[in-house]
Length: 134
Image 1 (cartoon, helix red, strand yellow):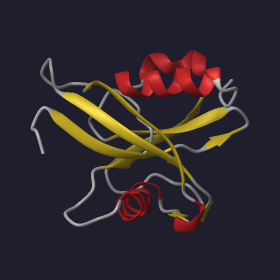
Image 2 (cartoon, rainbow, N blue to C red):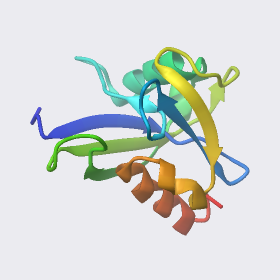
Image 3 (spheres, helix red, strand yellow):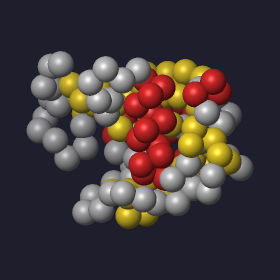
Image 4 (spheres, helix red, strand yellow):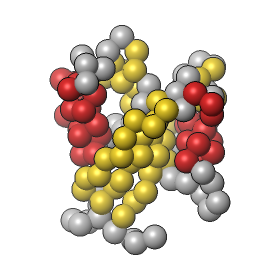
């Protein structure tokens, strides 16, 4: 993998026109939950593992629906380092709660996108344009 590209997966969970975001300990920006795949993992395996680790819920693999792939300058990284987020929606079981490195979770509407990473701003706009985000 090119070291100027950060390949991530993200889980888009929307309730009442607001999207779930998380902030890691010591970080200043919120992001759509997810993370990087480990060697040999499929998108589904990596996303299910990351969401379980971060939010204590289990996303149902059979319910995963590809939403889109978005790219932008990586937050807090050197100029030219790009994050690419492959996004999915899907049903889950359990109670969403911050775990592992997650310090805080929030439900945001579009007008609150000033506290999210650059790639998330692009995703927020796409969700707004599709009528999924208030």
